[in-house]
Image (cartoon, rainbow, N blue to C red; front, side):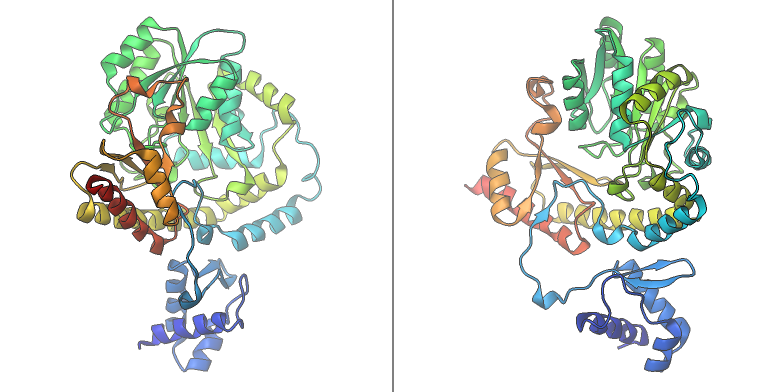
Length: 451
């Protein structure tokens, strides 16, 4: 046993015995070094390894804190849910965010709990302006609306654009199910363009834009939900070119922007020099879903109307999480957190890709991206989706079928023959050791052929 292994074993045994509890600060590096007769630097390295394994987390200049530990010999069979789109609980920075919440209360207590004035340019807007510039999103604070989650931002845009008109919304097929439900609720007629691994059929897209009265196009260019596909830069440019040609507003949902290769990918907003694109930013999938903070970057002509509509809906977005998120970004803790999340998800996808390469039958079509959180499967014809779901449920595995992403009677999936009998697997909330459950999914699919 190496010295680092000895240190890690000591910490885990202390946790297993209940002497170190969840959320408790670990003994200092000096204490452990003296106790185990090792170098303080070695203890620090062992703590860093425990952090990489999501057993502890660190606060800058605040030490290391225990997340959770369970003796694997005492675990019981659990359900593995590939349908839930949520961050891995071990990656949520509870302690760090508590720290900035407390700091925000101390710094802004005189005006933190008053109503925010309408159209006010908050600290978070200024911070987001600078932060988003690194991703190629250039704007001014006045064009940023802070929302209660990205979903509210999308709703406000749709309500404004389609208020008192009968124009149509173009969506990708398949696409994010809540946008389909929202558009249906608002009485917006939808048309679809198929999203494939190699992008769109631009000839069909232009035909739709030319012949139909399309007001807006809702699109997820990167880490597409549910397929995990990402557009190339040339496909983004072509999309902008066509939408500008036919005066169609682009609603870009860039909900996972931090998880990709920033050097190789830019948002659609970057390529739209006419600035006729709405850019939707979310913090739910990479950070903390519960704080419900999102942002929309708007073309100038939509700012005042959407700001007023938001004010009429909820007066303002809570100041406390805004101020805390502002401090979290400025401190550098957010960037550190994102790097940890990105690495965790990349590792899971890498392991999933290895499993598919070794076990997948030739007639199972699958896509495992390098970045993101979604895996997309197109099942062989001999697999009945409802039966597969039930078989896997009996084995403790939950999957997501394609039904909600097409929503029959809204967009007929029969019109899109390349997208049928599909399954979405989300790896974000799956623990690293549970990725191996994909082996069971593949073997269950193979069993259908034998039957």
